[in-house]
Image 1 (cartoon, rainbow, N blue to C red):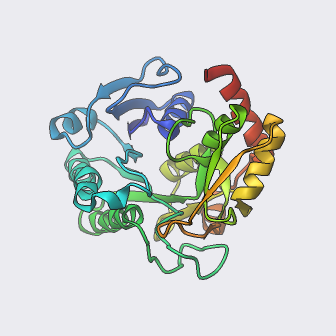
Image 2: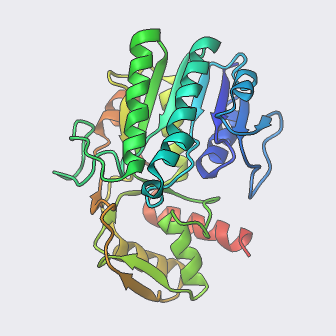
Length: 308
């Protein structure tokens, strides 16, 4: 039985990944500062509550671990620039400590969630391939890209295998509708409650949204398969959708009109994020399976039955 440590395993992405790992007969440990919010951990999962920057917890959590999934991150793209040194302390330093601990524990592979939405910066062409120049325009992208470089260094110096996933915008059940990121969950909740939506700019900003189960399948594939060189993969929904188009689809699902408040565009937002996922399709056989219409229906059903 393969043993996994999921750092940040009680969050939106992590909770879905843990459930799928258990279903696939992995031995799973979760390290997170918070408990699960919307459902319970599956039976048999070990939960260690704490910060992954605490070395003594890392030593305990990494015992016998084959694969580490690093999903924890303390900032989002719109807050990362507010305290640059703090962003480094909260995200980069603990991640380097995690990689050092993996090296000494004999961990086989680290799977890291990077950011297809921020590491490239403003796109020179659409869709964006992994070979696109990397010119992040916010600290979130800078830190994610820096971790990628540390992973490359640890592979070169110490043989620690790694996989990097650069996702566009995942969405689905268990995404916090009261948070400051996750347009699908926030928009569904606010439209249903007749609350206004804030749009930064004119609504033409576009992303390729994709459902959480498709992200989980990419994480599993990157943990279980032989990887290309470099083992860095874009993942997304393969379809460009503007914010205004997304709102129209949400209005159809909820059967309500949205109230929109427009604000000036923000300099740290990339205007378009549509990723070329041909590399992961050809090397790992992954492709998105859930359409945006299906995913919105599933997310809305979960929200109606779960969120007050």
